[in-house]
Length: 145
Image (tube, rainbow, N blue to C red; front, side, top):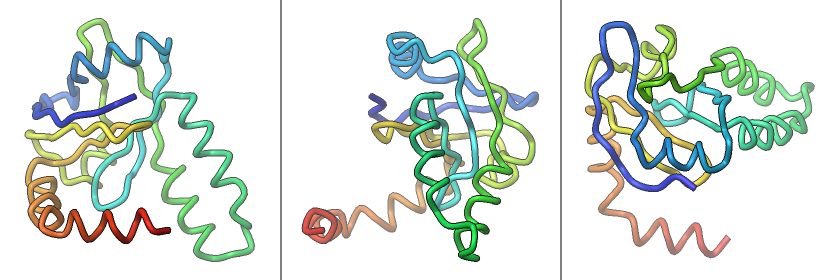
């Protein structure tokens, strides 16, 4: 669904333009409701509602009697915000999520198949530089599982 990497800026009011290609995919899938939450590795995750419901059902299966499961679910769901794309193609990123991802102005928006990731430009560059050297090794390990 979502593929590619795009650089954008977030305005003083916390509004971020969603790349046109991603807006087209959302429109094609009639995805009007989106969920934005804390992601992993210091980014934010943006899900169309249908993908959010899939993730939600998976996380509901984690026993609440397991401390790590409770902690993850609390952090993941308590940070979630229901957002929608306005007529200019923007979403409003809540302050607590901007702070979590250390987003000030420049961002990188990354398509990761069923979700969109929103990174501060500095964090994305650090992640990319730290990961690209081991891409083939990662592929071998991940594909064997």
